[in-house]
Image 1 (cartoon, rainbow, N blue to C red):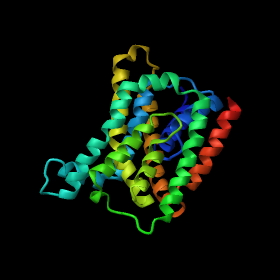
Image 2: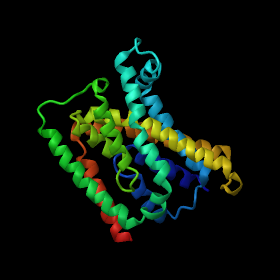
Image 3: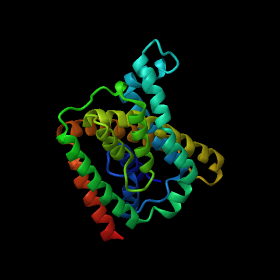
Image 4: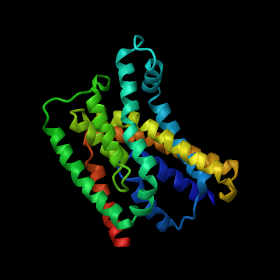
Amino acid sequence: MDYINIILLGIVQGLTEFLPVSSSGHLILIPRLFNFKDQGLAMDAILHLGTLLAIIIYFRQDLARLISSLFNRDHDPDYHRLAWHIGWASFPAGIIGLLGGNLIEQELRSPVFVAWNLLFWSLVFFAVERYSDSQKSTKTDISRMTLGQVLFIGFTQAIALLPGTSRSGITIIGGMLVNLSPTTAARFSFLLGTPIILAAGAHKSLHFLSSQINSVHLSGLQLGVGLLVSFAVGYLSIKLLLRIVSRLGLMPFIIYRVILATSILIAF
C-alpha cells in the first residue's frame, strides 16, 4: 500500500467518523474513485485508534471528570450520574452490534440501500432541526440530563448501525429532540460515542491479532502515518463540526448528504 492511499484513508476516517455525513457512504464511493486495495486489519485498527485519540484529547477535561467521578459520587455528583448514564446508553448499540452486526454487514451495505438511507435521514435531520429552531429555550448542561433522555439518545445511536445513517448525525438530532441546544447535543454525541469508537477499535485489533497471518503487510512507518493523519483530521473535524453546528446548524451536512446519495445512485 502506498502512502497516498494511506493518507486518503486517514482523511476519510478522520472526517467521516465525526462529521454527520455517513462513513459507509464514503467507504462505498472512495475505493471506487481511487481504486483502493484492501488496506488490511492492521490499518483499520490503527485508523480507529487515531480517531479515538482525537476525541480523548479534545474532550480530555470532560472525560477526566467522568472517569474520576465514576466511582466517587461525592466528588462530582453531576458527572458521576452522567458517567453511569453514558454507560447505560452505550448498551443498545453494543448489543445490536454484537447480535446483528454480521447481518448488517452482509445484507445492508448495498449502494442503493445506503443512498436511500442517506436521503431518508437527511429529511429527518432537516425536520428535527426546524423543530429545534422553534423551541424558545434549550438546555446547555449535559450533566443535568435525565436517564430517560440519555437512553433515548443511546437508542438513536443504535439506529446508526444501518449504513447511510451517521452515528454523530442521529445522536445530535436525538439530543435536539430532548431539547438540548445543537452545540450541546453535538458535544454529548462525542462523549457518548467514545465507548463505541473504543469498542470498534478493540474489535478490529482483536480480529487482526487472531488472523494476522492473512493480513496485509505494513511497516511501522506506514501504520504511523495512518495514525497521525486520522488523528489530525479527526481532531480538526471535531472542531469543525462544533463550529458549523453552532453557527449554521446541520444544513451544510444535509446538503452534502443529498449530493453524496445522488452520486451513489448515479454511480451504481
